[in-house]
Length: 568
Image 1 (cartoon, one colour):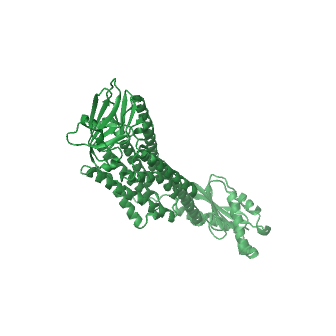
Image 2 (image 1 turned 90 degrees about the horizontal axis):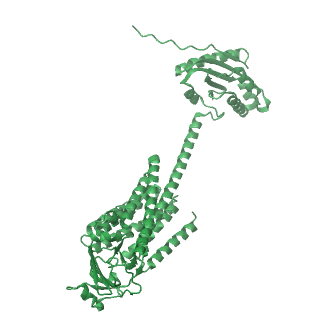
Image 3 (image 1 turned 45 degrees about the vertical axis):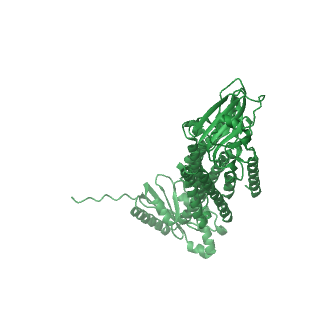
């Protein structure tokens, strides 16, 4: 991927993040139904729903909710027009950290229906997308107003947010949409998990296991952040679900850094960066558990500490990518693309947690989208890394094979050298035939053509031998102008045919070069067998030379030595 494409991708992600930040708070609760404006009042001693409803002047409709701080609050909706009121309504709000949440539904006939929950029972009302949904009782009179009492609000992101009224069909459509989104993420993550576990079983690369650990943490995070955990365990405390949400997100972020350490080349993490990233990974890993412990004492402080730790973890990505760029990593562009979305949206959520932006539906759900994108790109990165490792392995094997061939080959003729020839010949099963071939009057050839010409004669001679022998034979240059062939005795190879081929070979300056051959058959099970067979073939070669050269002689086949009788 070229640099300009990468830059355009990053700019597009920044644009999407900006759009998410710009969404109004009403664009919450699964985007189902009609948004409601609300006003806030603190709970005072002696307050009842009736007294609060009779004193609308107590409510503040302009101050941002997070400015009120933690505590107990009344939240009053704007009047609901009778003409637009739905009879079988669903009241939907985003899930927040609260000890108790009570909804008072006011009807046009003056009746008030109350639905009270605490942090445990509210889980039964959690829908997909972490939306708390109430279904007030149906009455002939329409709903005119909603009043919430929120006790023990941490108010880190608001007292309530994303408040909407919807009908049953809109609610079901929102759940179906969110189910499709989270199922797609879960299916993608499970597919990546199975794929990389299968690869790890075959390849055993450490970065594949760290990737799988990251995906498992992200799956657990998605289960808790989506509200599916409350569906699976309706009795779970909703605040505990959020604690699990923090813990799994911290583990996922920690494993992302550990995955990067295992994936990038070691040179990227040399020096201080290696130590710093380990610190960041440990802090991110324990941040959720620290939050879970501290939130029992002071949830806003615990949330602020967790946000600062996450901010530190995000800043570590900058020197990682910088080092990867300055040190020429082959995987920089993949990580830049894969990390862009999670870093941007996590940064936006941290800014929201620190009170610099107000949360909205898309920002709250951006984590799942961005993590799905990161998991996809990381899986592509793993495939790319495996391809590169395979290529490096193949090149190393090719180099090793070439080096072995060079070590086994005679550098002038390309045939096996004596050492390799003996290694391949000794131990061949069955009766073997050894042909020892010597060029006649080779000293005269060197004197006539010079050493370069003599070398060329040796090369042509070797090429002719290689073409003349059948498959399965072993041929080598075992001395200056001496060559040898070993093959199974039952394979026909006439020495005279070899002589004729060598005699007909076109030599430099059309010089006629002849040779002599000595042959013998016998076993080659041991080195001792080789020595016996070679001596016999060499004697036959000497006889051929003595008889006038340019001819072949064959020694009598060798019989195996009789076994040595043991002493009685």
